[in-house]
Each structure stands twice: as structure tokens, then as C-alpha cells.
Length: 233
Ligand SMILES: *Cc1c(COP(=O)(O)O)cnc(C)c1O
Image 1 (cartoon, rainbow, N blue to C red):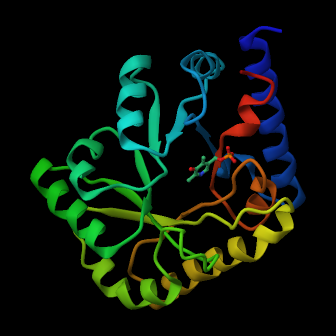
Image 2 (image 1 turned 90 degrees about the vertical axis):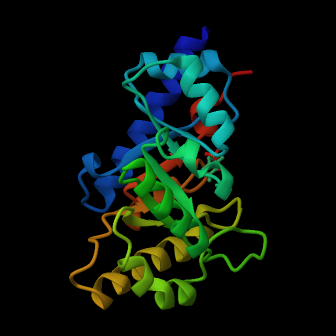
């Protein structure tokens, strides 16, 4: 089978699984956006996906996001940054990324605010939360975010649109569910804490191994890589 056929079949299957998960919990599948993670994909594979009409792509490294965006060179595409952002890459990332999922500290958020003002941009971001308790994982601890929330509310440029998390790796998707539920509860708590604050519509959670559980728990953005590239390479 050709790359085109394999990618088309994988894509269709992932969209069907998203729709089925939505149906199980009475959600409209239009509420869930598939961010196709291209970090392991060859350029041809990404092009085959784009040829299916898909526009939301995710990279975990700024440098690769820039080079891919340039190589594919299609203005209709939206690139999401889903991995760590160093402060010295903020200036180049802000104009290139439609949404940054992975803000993991107040320092980074403040650097973005300052540079966004200089560039006259209003960047859309999500705050990454570490709910797995693993030291190696990036992100705010939940209590840290609750404490920092007043500072988050004082930002003028940055649009904080929600939260993101990565569950601890496990073979069993049910193991991820408590972290997904905790992210939704934290979002609800922040909303209650500041009713006049941002509405936090987005929850970015769920990857190839656990996106159905994430959707059942309220994900609006699922970040899926390997399930789209199965059978290639
Ligand atoms: C790689 C990556 C994904 C996608 O992982 P798959 O298991 O390949 O679907 C999602 N989110 C982040 C932050 C990643 O780095």
C-alpha cells in the first residue's frame, strides 16, 4: 500500500475512534480537535495527512516546528507547540505557533507576556500541569497554579485558554483517567476562583494510547502521533 493509502486509513480510523468516544459520553465531536503530532513522521507522511484536508499539526520542538512549517509551506496549516519552550526561543515561536500547549512556569509566561507586547501579538497558550507527580515531567504543580492564578489573571497580552497534561506512561489507558479527571477538576476550580477571569475552554490531554479516556473526561484537544503513522517506515 502507498503512503497516501496508509495515512488516509489511519486518519479515518482515528477520527472514527474520536467520534465513538464522543458518542459514548454525549459530546459533539466538533468539540474535539485532533492535533496530529508530526515529531516522528517523515515529511512525505505529513504531506499525505495534509492532503486529507487536515490542518492542525503539533511539534514538540520549536526548531522542528519552524523548519517543518517552512518545508511544507502551506499558509492554511496551524502549528501547535506541544513540548518545552526555552525562553530564548519565545521571540521566534510566538509568530509561528497558533497555540502553545506547554507553558510550564510563571517565568516563561512572563517572558511571553513581555515579548508579545513588543511584537504586538496576543498569543494563545495553555498551562501545562504535572498531575502524574513524576519529577521528570514538566508543568505546574496544581497547588502552585492555584497560588499563581492571580498573577496569571494580571496578564494583558497572553490569552490563557486552558490547561494541558501528559499522563504517566502505561499500557492501560484507564491508568490515565485519574490525571485527566484531575485536570478537568482543576480547570473547574480555577473558573470558580475567578468568575470574571478567562473561561478556559480548552483541555489538551490524551495521546495515541489514551485519547479515548481523555475525550470521555472532557478533552477538547487530543495530541496524537503514532496512531496516525502506524504501518509506515
Ligand atoms: C509525542 C507527543 C505526543 C504524541 O504521542 P503519541 O503517543 O505518539 O500519540 C503527544 N503529546 C506530546 C507532548 C508529545 O511529545
